[in-house]
Length: 300
Ligand SMILES: NC(=O)c1ccc[n+]([C@@H]2O[C@H](COP(=O)([O-])OP(=O)(O)OC[C@H]3O[C@@H](n4cnc5c(N)ncnc54)[C@H](OP(=O)(O)O)[C@@H]3O)[C@@H](O)[C@H]2O)c1
Image (cartoon, rainbow, N blue to C red):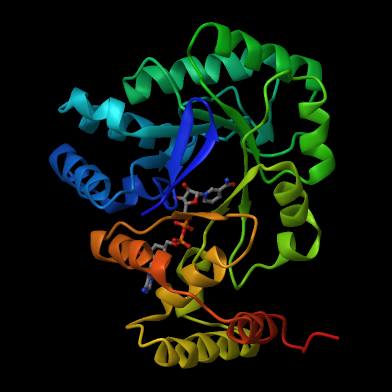
């Protein structure tokens, strides 16, 4: 698998693993460690987290598993996010879910993530969602402070539109290296709104969250979704691919912006399928057939 250079201090594999569902898998620390090592062995060395995942528990589980093999740390890249405050028994003072991108919250969230992940640096920190009250000077100040302290090596955003990303970039001297967006054949928003074109122009990497639609592509609930699944199956046959995951990943890889899927499966076999898909090429007609099946109408 190829690796993609995002900055002097960050190179990511073409596929990142997402840890959002880690608590649901109910693994022992040994099982978590085994999964991390198996992913690393097939080239998936980067793991995506957020402070809030698993009601603020996922980072801790991952950190405890990793601490059984500390030598793994310099072989992997850790991505985490901050900026969302959940209603949670962990934080009873938070009565309403909201966003907080104040300098104080960003720094304290990262400090907790470092403790939970049992590491002294984060490779890439993302602001999880655009905050209506975000002040770019404060965010840039928080980023600069964390960078100077060596606590975070690279910065980016998630679910941001181009104008929102540019707002933060206008006050921060280092380049923002990634924008993590919902992108899949079932979610075309960022293909249609110019966001992917903007990221390509600026050489900022798009990471695709829920690349398989969070699993929903496999169990369609609408007529359009059913048509999309049938089209993916038809193209899987043409490509001699065993399943439609391969087609979905190769559809994402075909975009010139260099999309990195954040794969959310807890099954190593399914991660292998994603890795194999890096060698599968769709032709333009196949690519557009998938787009058309998803949107439910031909291109004009
Ligand atoms: N930035 C953001 O706002 C944001 C939002 C959401 C998620 N994320 C990140 O993106 C990552 C991936 O999201 P995701 O988990 O929704 O991604 P996904 O890869 O689209 O979906 C994973 C789900 O699909 C299931 N699945 C995979 N292959 C399948 C198949 N062949 N048949 C049926 N089900 C299948 C998986 O089940 P198995 O485990 O059984 O394979 C899992 O439940 C998250 O872990 C998180 O890191 C970020």
